[in-house]
Length: 217
Image 1: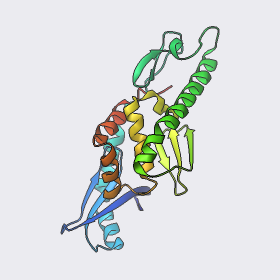
Image 2: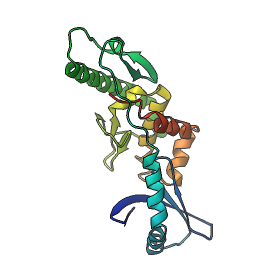
Image 3: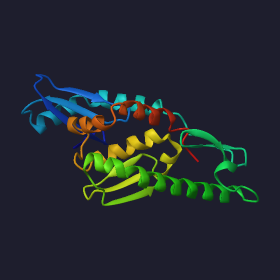
Image 4: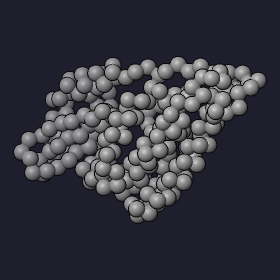
């Protein structure tokens, strides 16, 4: 669900329960979760969100202000780039001799796309069996806002920069998107399913949040 506050569109999920009051939580990724008493109507929830509008805008601005600028990279043989969670010299990842900076950038991005595709395709199989789901299509994309996505047609997409993350973090994003095949929202059932496979998923989220500025070209 989504709501417009001060010309900004925000997506939110609702968790219904036995509590008597509405409450709101914004996690480290900017996901808004509303906890509401059973039977609360959508208009009531929307009105409460508007009442919290200024607070929501303020929290989101604080979140944006804490983001670290991407790390500038040196395109030379001994310049370092992350691969599977470790800093590697460029010459360890691709051929560097006699190539211009533009050629090095192009080849390095191609390397990450290829490696990410290989990693995802090899590691997703066991999790599909465990979760008893099957993706119809898997693609590797360039994205500056998402590590992965799943649409209603069970088509999964993964950010090529995941090849820069440790394998266990890559596994978390795989599990996260596979769980969306049966739970399209970030509701309580979704997080329970994720946690059943990966109990320490919050640590993986924290890694991505804290290291995303290092996972750049």
